[in-house]
Image (cartoon, rainbow, N blue to C red; front, side, top):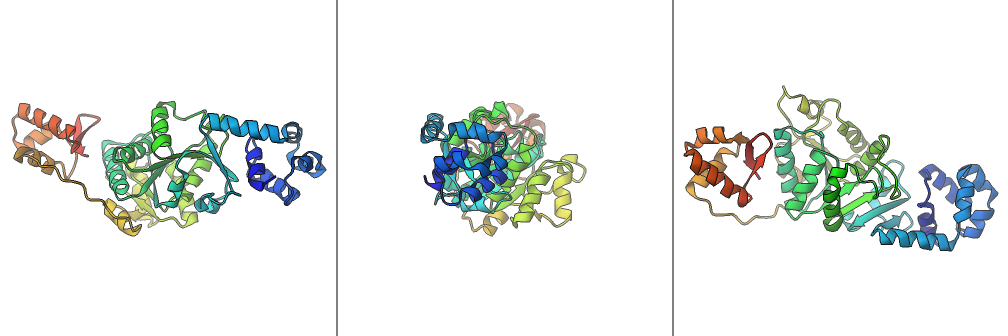
Length: 353
């Protein structure tokens, strides 16, 4: 039996990487089911798991298991496969196998992790969309964790721009969390990549999220935190990035906003590079920003766009700045939305797309 097949067999059981490592040491280069069943030393390593696995240790079980994964459109790649992503070999406690849907080769491209608060402010939404858009248009692969807030915004914006995005799950494919992001998960699986180190039925329990974050940081060539509070979970991802030598960028925020305390502190401590424009990250990673075809705007449309360049505004502020008739302004805002030049944000605010 090949080592790749043996690792696929082991992936069917809930075994830690430590146990798998010990099993491989005992099995040496002989990965036959016969040796596995008759190896007394394995019982000391696996304890109660040993008898459960021994009952299933045969070629028929492995074949049925792989067929079941195929039926769910779930692929599996092991450390013994030649095309196992090299980036995954350099994370803490590297996984022996990865379950995935989509294009695993995306991990060979320049990947930028975008993470942050699960409850972003209008400012946080705006800057996350801006950075995700520009990085995706420049060919960067947007990586995140499919969570509420910044994660979801970054994934969606990359997809809107026909860019590529990678979602790393904390659990298995049969337990997508949060469930509200199931349609987003399906779209990423079709157009990008979704991966996890866990079997399909594993639930996304609390202790698995830090494990997920080590992979988010490890497969990325840069980490961007767009908005995060002082006690944000993004600190875990940031710490992994520091350990891996992954460059960290943080978007500065209002010093009176608690939602930006984490990013501002990161910049002040000089652990993160102050990111005020996506172009700096694009340049650092050697990406090339794609030119977009400019759209012809009327004088009044251009006036509105110019007023939104500095900050998002509500209709009253835009009317005050442009002096346009309110009915005409409403019509122009709708037209600019349809053209994809501006977008409506929560709270009745508008910003550039």
